Amino acid sequence: MENIYKLTHEQISSYEENGFLIIKNFLENHEVESLVKAAHDYAGDNIHNYLNFHRDLTEFNQTILRSDLHDICDQLNNFRMIPIGSVFFFCKPNNPLENGSNPHQDNYVAKAPFGSYFVASIALDDASATNGALKVWPKSHKLGELPFKDTKNFEFDNDGKLLKAYPIGSECQIPDGFEEIVLEYQKGDLILLHSHIIHAADKNISAEGKWRRQVYFHFIREGDPFWPGWNARRQIMDRGPRRV
Ligand SMILES: O=C(O)CCC(=O)C(=O)O
Image (tube, rainbow, N blue to C red):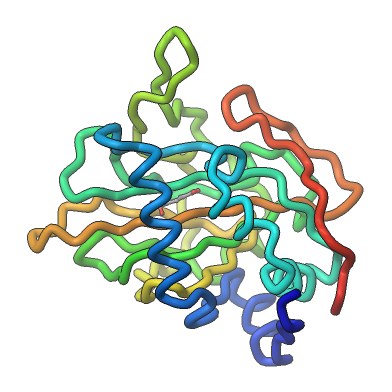
């Protein structure tokens, strides 16, 4: 069993104020490498987004079920947070099958009560503006649910196999007074996102050929309703008790 992961008051209040938090070195290099290898072994030459690797790949299943990850999610939400889904991004440089993401809030997919849906993302490569790192608009989670333009995220074939991604996310307008920041983070870092923070990512067009692999794990506050989605088919998973 993992040691209890205790956050500081500063980390919790920074998350509450800004709508995101980065925890450095959450995974060790060998753990990152085993996730990357599992993803590539599964995808082969079909490099595009994948939904729910945690259902098909042991490495991702074990990661979404880590007690220390749950400790962090539980403390930031002051609730027992239940894993319900995941999405994987390869962000291969100049990949025609991946097209970045529009400024959006994530809750439009889960349609959960404010503050209930929650995102914990693990970087599997170092990321900066040069390879399309995640951008956030700090404090925008305080705006609540903004109007958005409903757009298609993914293209599927007739058997339901995902073929390619359009710019991800149903775009919202950025209200006056909110400034974008491009995050910088290293492989193994954990990025926690409120489901109403506006975020986006440029398509990775790295001239140096730097990939930006990253996995997003999705959680819901225990007991709250959410929409499963026709593509993601979010579903609750068993996890251990709340420890902190
Ligand atoms: O990392 C990315 O490219 C963006 C991910 C994203 O916007 C999302 O999963 O909602």
